[in-house]
Length: 95
Image (cartoon, rainbow, N blue to C red):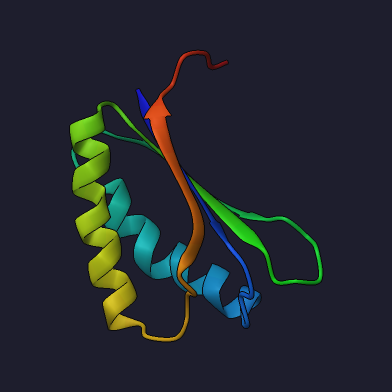
């Protein structure tokens, strides 16, 4: 498995963004080959910081999901700020 973690600061409309991700983006990502899981996490501080974790069966399928994400972001300008941190790598332990 291969996971990508993204951190976002200054999310202005966290409730609306969470709703739209659940209703619009997650179904698109879920339909991609190699999909394992997607999580959108409210870090809970006052700076509007949120994180996403996406897990795919392989690096190739995880990288292919980036195209879907870029398309969704382009179709929803201003809703999601640029990621301030992006880390990705093989999953070495899980439970």
